[in-house]
Length: 80
Image (tube, rainbow, N blue to C red):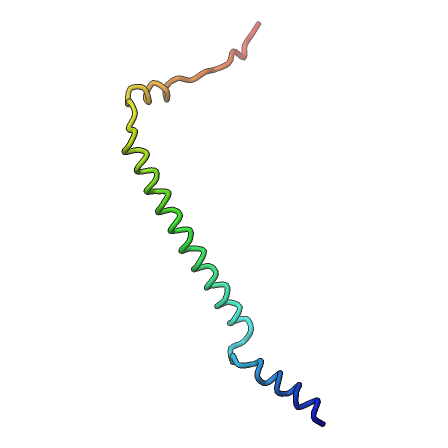
């Protein structure tokens, strides 16, 4: 008679959250998503800061940059 009391107590104490399983799982997934989003935002902010520092440190020569952008190499495809 006593062994079943242990099983009942185990099942009874294990079900402390009254919400359905799909709601608990949805909440868990949402917490993971928010943590991931926060980490991603922190990374993007640090990347943005690093890019700004790099651009401010070395603005380069605008004439050289324009020349480099305009130079295109086209291979000869019509050899007769």
